Length: 317
Ligand code: MTE
Image: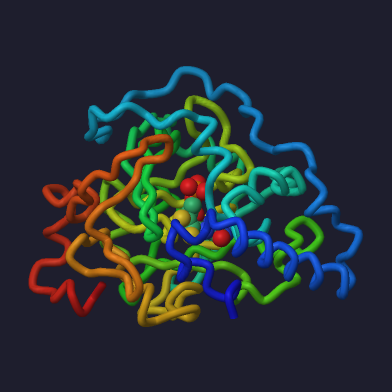
């Protein structure tokens, strides 16, 4: 089904008006046929993309390893993926105003000495917030340079102690049909869950982000807490996290379930491993016309390649 694997659609097709119109019509019909007819998602609700509250003075970070100019806030906050709010790039900004980000808590469980639930207010006090300017690359071929605000994932490990069995970390995200209209439709296997290896999570480039462009996170970009792993394709960056679970075995994630041949568990940006249906050798920055070459590990090879020493990255894509 066309909408079952939205990533299967090359970017050129995504903007094809005929494809776009038929997909919207299909979704709209499904909504009207079901109990969600009154959701108003196709009726041009106010954008949720207005800038958030200032996050005050931020620590600058030695991990902003790029001189590239940040992509305009408007592009990053109005073009993205958040399937709980719709299957196309514009619907998250249109529909995410429905998300309630307070009260919010995150449960940390699984292979930890003691499972705990933290209020988002406490999480915000774990560490001084840093601005991290990262290059980001989507598996669909678009990219952006984003000044995230957050703190290293490793700060979490000061509050919970993983057991010796913990090898992977799962990031589970909210799936509330009351707030997220498309959770009523099996676009993906809800709740959205992505996972990385524990050593990847501990890498100093991996952050939990609470904002961007100096302000609290726009809802459509994953408020109030999301994962950012700059050397992996964007779908690893789980948005609106409610649970972090440490596990022993490599889990099946939302995207490996949706298409194991197309979305590998590792999802490291690798220009030499094409997606089943398009090349990954180049990318287009949001707002730019000409494509640029995609770099291995999205340009972070020097920092992260060692994590994969001895692994065949053609097989472990
Ligand atoms: N997180 C949730 N909960 N739901 C989603 O649909 N989409 C992923 C990721 N995180 C997604 C998600 C994908 S496919 C991408 S490319 C990035 O979010 C997009 O993040 P951005 O919109 O901030 O660029």
